[in-house]
Length: 307
Ligand SMILES: C[S@@+](CC[C@H](N)C(=O)[O-])C[C@H]1O[C@@H](n2cnc3c(N)ncnc32)[C@H](O)[C@@H]1O
Image (cartoon, rainbow, N blue to C red):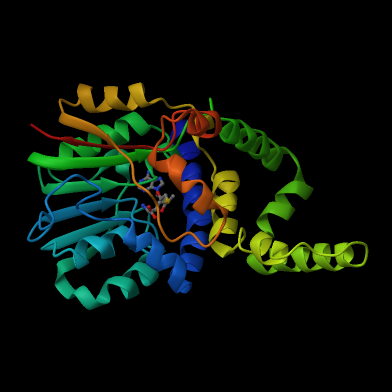
C-alpha cells in the first residue's frame, strides 16, 4: 500500500466512525428516523408516483441506518442494494430492513471503485456522500457507470463556502482540528447537555428579570437531538473539501458522464423539531438572496438520466 492509499483508507475509516455514531443515534430516535425516511418521494425526484414499483435501486453510502433504502422499499422497489464502507454498519441497517426480506441486500462498497457491473440499476441514489470521499468526481462517474441506460443517477453535494454559514463551519472545522479542548466540547455535545445549558440560562435570567410570554418554550423548541447531530456532522466529518463545490461543477460531472435531462432539485423539508424549520424556506428557494447569503449555492441535489 503506498502512502496515498494509506491516507485514503484512514480518511474512510475516520469518516465511517463519525457517521456510524450519528446514524445509530438517528435510528434510535423515531422522530429523527421518520423524518429522514420521509425525505424520499417520487415527486421530489420529479418522477411519476408509481415509478419505483418493480425497480432495482442502488443506495450508495446508505449510512448505518439506511433510511433512504427503507423509503425505496416502501415505495415498492423490487430490490434495493444498500452499500457503504465496511461491514460494521450492517447490524443497524439489517435490523431496519429485515422486514423486506430478499428485496433488500447489504454490501461493503466504496463509491470510488464499485465492484458492480456496468448498467445494473434503474436508480442510483447517493445522498451526502461524495463530498466525504477522496475523489468526488471519480465517485460520481462510478454512479453513472452502474446505472442502466435510461436509468437515473441522483447525487447530492453539500453547499458552498460562498455562504456565511459554511464560512463559519470552515472556521469551526479548523478549530476542531487544532484545539483539543474545542474538539472535546464538540465531541461531547448532546441534547441533554443543551437542555441543561438552557436550564441554567433561564434560571439565572429569572433571578434578574421577568420572562417574556412564551420565550422559554420558543427558545427550547429551536434545539433538539437532530440539530445537535447536524452540527456535529458538519464539524466532525474528516472532510467536506472546504465546502468548495459549485452547482456548475456538479452539472459538469453529469454532463461529462453523458447524462441527459439533468435537473437541480429542491424541496421544502418538513418535520424539523428545531431551528432548521426556519431554514426550510431557504432550502426550497435556494436562489433567494437570503438563501444565497447563508448557504451560498446551497445543497446541490441533482438528478440526471443515463442515455
Ligand atoms: C452523511 S452520511 C449519508 C448517509 C445517507 N446517505 C443519508 O443520506 O442519511 C455519509 C455516508 O457516506 C459514507 N461514505 C463516505 N465515503 C464513502 C465511500 N468512499 N464509499 C462509500 N460510502 C462512503 C459514510 O460511511 C456515510 O455513511
